[in-house]
Length: 215
Image (tube, rainbow, N blue to C red; front, side, top):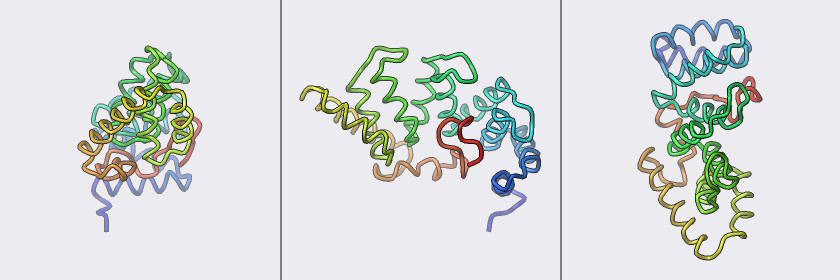
């Protein structure tokens, strides 16, 4: 049984309160732990602050909290920052920062981050279009059970030359090997990497936080 007095125990209780709609109770716990430097609490406080759940919306404060969590290796925060800077939904677009944060999350097994990197390289967003790199990241996301990535990977594959296909497959293998080394999991299990290394909060929203609301 989890010690409810430990930071992890308090976070689990706060997550339960959050999912039950007790925003103020969850917020008070996340705020205290975030002040103490807990990256999971910093992520959740950022999420609530971004959406205005139990507190006033404050995009600048939310981004600052996401950055603090991301700097400590929190996968969910890294992925969300990547989305924010890619989409420009609550801050100005910054495609270089988007790639940096998405790469950090993707290499830790975050499937959506890998999918978005595939989009960046396929469309040439803030960088030169690179179909082989796009395919490699879409393949990574596909192996992490992302259905949209599987569809886009198959469509892109038909457009690659045989040589590009060979290069793309080798690149995807190298990425999967790096993820396996980073997470300590077999390639087929990288989608659970964040849960294993404690980087992604239980019940963390997938995709844009503003669209997700409560997990």
